[in-house]
Length: 143
Image (cartoon, rainbow, N blue to C red; front, side, top):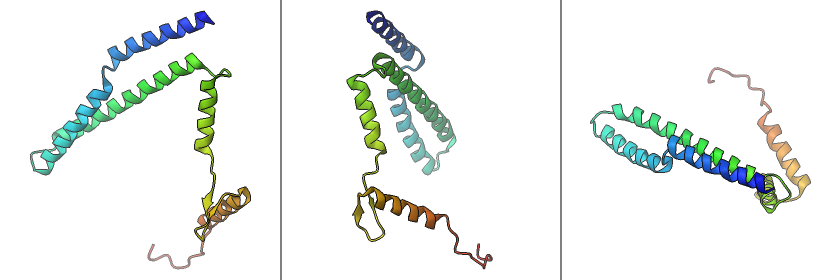
C-alpha cells in the first residue's frame, strides 16, 4: 500500500510540474483576459473598432478549455489517491451524487408541494403526456 501511495504522490508531483509548464497560471490569465474583453467591448461600443473582440473571445475559450482540462486531471489524481475503496471519501462522493440526483418532491398543478413517490410519478406522467400530445391543429397558415 505504501508503494502505491508513493507512486500516486510522484504522479501528482509530475502533474503539478506539467501544469506549470503547459498551463501556467490559467486562472489569473483567464481573469486578465476577461477584463481585457470588457474593455474591448467598451471600445467597440464607442466606435473604436471591434477587431480585438474575436481574438479575445477565442483566447478566453481556449483558456477555459485548458482550465477544464486542468481540473479534470486534478480530479483524476484525487481518484487515484483515494479510489473507490470503502473509504470516507468514496462514501461522501456517492452520497453527494445521490443528493444531487434525488427528486424529493414536486409542485403539482394546484401549487401544492407533493413528496409521495406515486404522486410525483403521476405529475411527471401527466406533464410529459401533455407535452408530447397534439391538439390536432387544422390551420397551418400562421405557422
